[in-house]
Picture 1 (tube, rainbow, N blue to C red):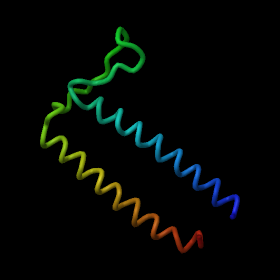
Picture 2 (cartoon, rainbow, N blue to C red):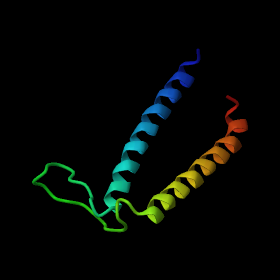
Picture 3 (cartoon, rainbow, N blue to C red):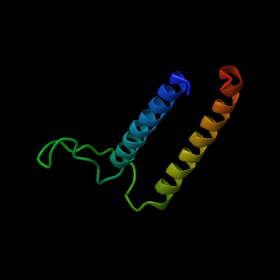
Picture 4 (tube, rainbow, N blue to C red):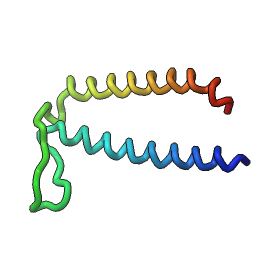
Length: 85
């Protein structure tokens, strides 16, 4: 196998994991529950945009995720002929 393909596949997996974790933390900071980044006694970060059980907030994030997935799909499709993978 091509070493560059193996490296890029690993890089894609790591970056997907990091983006997934950061998006989860970002979504938690938008709720009233927020996050405690370092310790239970440490600072509390919350932007109080919506409640945890907010239907509008949850569907809004679902729609944003769908738009991001479609955008990534079509951008990847347009780049694919250039990379010739």
